[in-house]
Amino acid sequence: MIYYAYCHLVVTYGLLFWGNSSHSTEVLRLQKKIIRIMMGARSRVSCREFFKILGILPLMAEYIYSITMFIVNNRDYFKENSKLSDIKTRYNKNLFQPQSNSSVYQRGPLYADIKIHNILPIQIKLLSSNFNQFKRALKDFLQLHSFYTLAEYLNYNRG
Image (cartoon, rainbow, N blue to C red; front, side, top):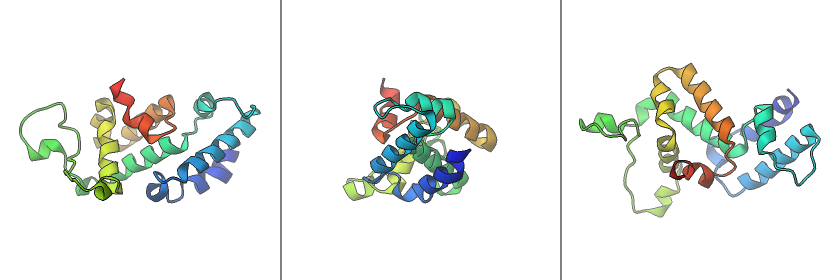
């Protein structure tokens, strides 16, 4: 309760805009420091299990959650591959990712948002029509894996 009362709101305020910035690693360090204090752990102990025990998402997992919920809440602004083509493929439930050679565009929020959403497991994407089930399944998935970095999440399906 203390974490959610004092820290969670500060950490997640505007997360969609700054979550992938270089300063996010500093915020993650502070978040882990708070978790260690709450659990009475030493400074060198890994916090991954503590996040799971407490039911708190690490900063990057919270960022992924925020982006995905933004996409689900604003579904009208995104196109699914199944709407663009009648051919049934395993990527039908993925969002259409516009092609761009511009690295500035590829580092931008829209490109990253779609990429993050497309990596979600298919069983979670299929629940997007039922908001509450989707929200619960997404949160459970992110708590189970406790992603510390975006690269960790992006490499999730690659083994």
